[in-house]
Amino acid sequence: IATRAHVAAKASQAQTALSHVADAYRAYLSRFGTTPAAGDIRENWAESLLAAKRSFDAGKAYEELEGATKKPDTKKLARLNAVASYQQAIEDPALGRLDRVVAWGGIRSLGRRFIQGTPSDPAVPGIKLSIARSYYETGDYETAAELFFGLARQFPTSNEGVAGANLCLDA
Image 1 (cartoon, rainbow, N blue to C red):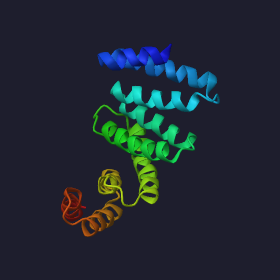
Image 2: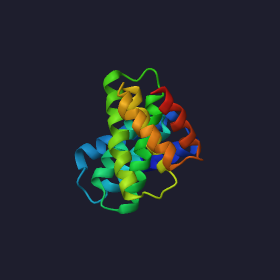
Image 3: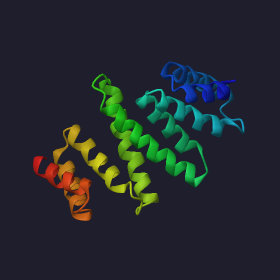
Image 4: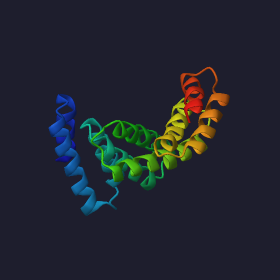
């Protein structure tokens, strides 16, 4: 039933409906989280949270998916989507302090795992910038400056590298 509702909600792009679908998927997973279908449901759950603009919850769901799946492509995509979702969540000024800390931690840990697994992926400079920014935003300016500098040296002509160079001077 939730999957049918998900298809209908995706077609209409109704955030409220997508949010209800995400809650239905979560309820399913809390009861049947070890069934063979749980992997697909977990993926649908994360996707519906992101579509419902529940970025922080989507980050946590993608992080859970990354830990639960054994499929390398799903794991890679889950890491990337978790980092992006946490980044979106941090942009929300209403995000609580504890959730902000969790989001920064998710960006750091999942971002590093993404980089280790796929060092030549085009998303790496953006992830490195997000990791460095997480240290800057939490007041660890020394670590942030080192990471921004490393980003600027590794990717000097990219937008992320230029931003890293400028932020290195600020840190």
